[in-house]
Image 1 (cartoon, rainbow, N blue to C red):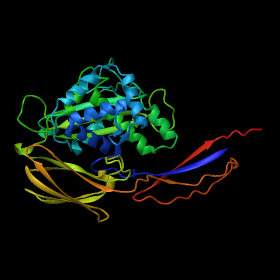
Image 2 (cartoon, one colour; image 1 turned 60 degrees about the vertical axis):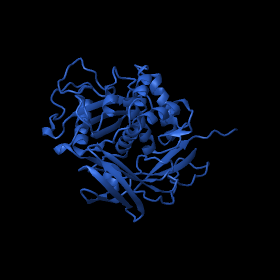
Image 3 (spheres, rainbow, N blue to C red; image 1 turned 90 degrees about the vertical axis):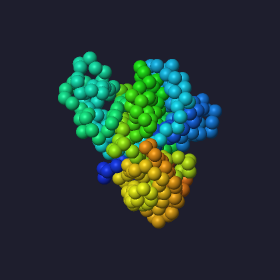
Image 4 (cartoon, rainbow, N blue to C red; image 1 turned 135 degrees about the vertical axis):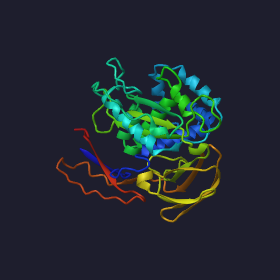
Amino acid sequence: MNKQLHVEQLEHRDVPAATVSTPTEAFSWVLINEMRQDPAGFANQLDALRKGTIPSAFGFSKSDPVVADLNRLLQYSSYPGHYGTALKMLRSTAPLGPFGWDDTLANRADLHTAWMKTHAFEHTGVDDPNKWYVAGFPTSYKGGSPDQWGYSGQYSWWGEDIGYTYGLMANSKAAYSAGQFGRVGFQEREAFIDTVSYVLEVNSPDMAHLEQLIAPDGGPPTGHPRFNAVGVNLEFYEGPNEVRDGLGEATISTHRFGFYQPGGSGGFITGVAYKDANGNGKYDAGEGIGATLQFSGPTSFTETLDRISTQGVSSNYVPHGTYQVTATAADGTPLGTQTVDIGNHNGWFEFREFGSATRQATAPTTSPSVTTAVRPTVAWNGVADAVGYQVRLTNSLLTHPP
């Protein structure tokens, strides 16, 4: 029997975040905003990545197992024709301002996801025994309201997207099991498929999810919803016919949208500070860093981002005008200054600190002749910024010739 030990760095999970709860929720939010800033480019990259005609997109190479899972999503879709419709919609949509992250909306998204686990897959609190239930959860039909919808006038518009996926991550799970990436890397790929499921609408009877994701973040009222803020809740669970190994391959999620514009002017100045540890030029789950942000403009203030509680995400509602944003990483590294314009719409900044492309520390491999009673000593070199390590012990029985 051969025993191989692999050690990977983990983000801290003990303290609940005040702003963004998990690395994958932050990743989903950044991915949505990447789509909004260049809808046509997003459509073109997604289509080319699926077909393998570009080397990489969204931080994934064309050989990444998540690409096979993306095609799996399309293979088992209920409305495959929506794929082309969604790409056409994105290609005809002008660039939009980003969604700011809103804590109230995120809290309501959490509540509604909890509702769907114990009630029906629905937007309303009115239960019906004939409702569609989320696969993998018991059909309890408890009744009652999932949350408060009114928001006490805080938002001019509000909306909601809900969804779940299961049975789609076979390729990424196999790569995880083979040690190609760790738990956070696997869940990032789940978050990618979960978000893309809303964009492509291949399992929805209409295009309403995508329409809300590309709603204007400002401009004059037109009778149609406008949204400038979102809260995302994304959870993982072990779905039907899945191996019960403690790492869920299924997702259930809620997006809550709102249009917040007190006084009729202003917008969210929002963005991320992160360490590009794998060198792919993209914000990946777990790469958010602690930083100090100085905002100078019509209103000036300083914000400190805690790596654990914010995932490197910043979101503040400000009066319209031009702002200078200067960022300094928690370790004192200057990250530069960017100019952001707010004009009754939102504005985006992105500060990137380059780090080591090595994401894993490795432990030694024991001798093939060890016995089942062996108690190996595990040692490894520390990884910068890691706040914990997960030791994965893989047993494999070697068959020797007689």
